[in-house]
Image (cartoon, rainbow, N blue to C red):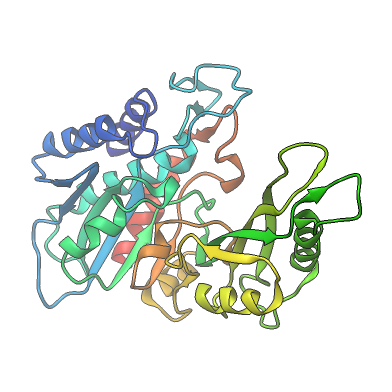
Length: 347
């Protein structure tokens, strides 16, 4: 019954647009799901959370968290991204895989354990907003309102394998400066050429410290803009660098190194999305290993980056389906997710 309810909730969520910062209606759906089970919830913005009934102050607290916001649909959908169609065991729809399946599986498991008195953890469920944009009105706003949390399960599509580390994100806006001049004469200093030198450095540079789980720091130039007209040597060239950091460096350290290497003026949009990890001997990891789950390092970012406690990222679905046309999740993956989450919690 619980698995059927979880799938029905996911179908409702898919049918309700919930782009980042516009998730009020799906927050309502989560609240209704719990209220029908006589589970009280709290709300801040578009975030919904609940605490298990039998709270014991001497027990560690485990956060069960996933997000209910989605990206906007990309081009190429064959069907309606807001129509939760089921075909050959697949549930199609925007947000079905990322991260609706994890969200409803965690919600179902929390509801299952809500009345349980002898759990090894105090449980908190959090349906978070603004994950896709790492917004300030999501997890970052809620955590200060909660009790001290000892560890967390972050629901994201990992094929129900254990992402025990994930790369951080540092976005840098760079501006190369030159001097304007007439393109027909040998004058001025072309900012594009200065930018190209820096871009070539970023393409080829390797940071010294690599990670067994996450590999090297990865830098990618993703945007570039310069020039006003064909006959004017541009005096500025702006470009954007997407940097995925491993746990061997903080974002501040990476930025400081780049400032010594590049001619362009650099500005970091934020330093707060650092790499995150959980110790290999943590009880959640040990329980996962006992279940035969594989550990790996994830190249993608999640709300784990904003959590100042150990987190295990795990959930039904596959990361490569996220943000794609005709996104889907297998119904059996949701059912398996519920079973595995239960076993992780009770040991």
